[in-house]
Image (cartoon, rainbow, N blue to C red):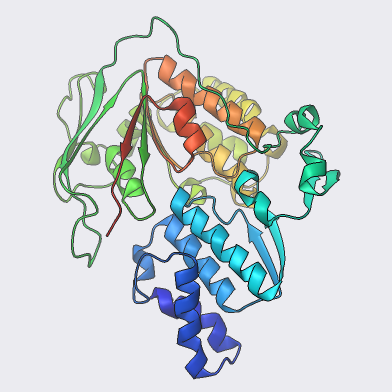
Length: 389
């Protein structure tokens, strides 16, 4: 629906709930998930994390006996994720529904969980029991299957002792994007630089403008206020040129972008062709383009779905494919929006290694993320955007 409150009310109306009960239940459900706006908020102005909260509110408003949740906090900021867990805990306490949760990282969910079923990578059930039975004494087995265990915090990426000195690649000045119909900009007069040999993490609550900022830095949006320009190091002979004016062929060879929604950037009907498309469009010979595609497919465990259509992949596989397509063109700057959602421990480690390799090869990385483990492991600098209120 076009407004947030109407979207939550939709299921109640279809259930034939008496009219007098609908809006009290809508408001209660929105409050339960920590909704940061009023019920009239246009849904086309919501961030990915806000959309996730809205969908959960719509489910909770129905007071179901069974809740099926597939990574419900994947794109939420830490405070928003905690509000969702609190809302679900209250729902379980009040009505005693059955809760089935599909999740990679289980630590924060353990107070709610009474049974854990671990699926093996090749299919079948690896372990099944109470959390204290599953997560005690099975560390090696779980690690071999890429399972995140409670308390596992990843690893800090090692950096070379003699890294090249950083160079400015992209300079953004006085950015102040304003969404349609918004009363004020998402953030006011922001200056940002992207440097080689460095990873910049962009953090902040849902709706603070992280996705907008990384699209501006990637040349995918025209700034309404301010400018985003290339340096001589990024584009020799074109220093000071506005990125949004670059044609796609010029952009793809220098800046690789990974969208928050992976399916928005798939253009072909096969995983193999998707991985080779960027290098081919940027002028790479076909043999080299296919070699890069094969190497990235193997490293990110996409070889098993080599001939599949990208839209048929799981969410985690789609995310890895979107990251691989950006890496395939070997851009000087890699800009990623929530690159690690839906990843098990093994694929998360591999993705971290690839991003570290980008930074270590005198290129720049910008990551917009709520993944605090990734920020701790990768980031050299962190830019936190303020809340949108």
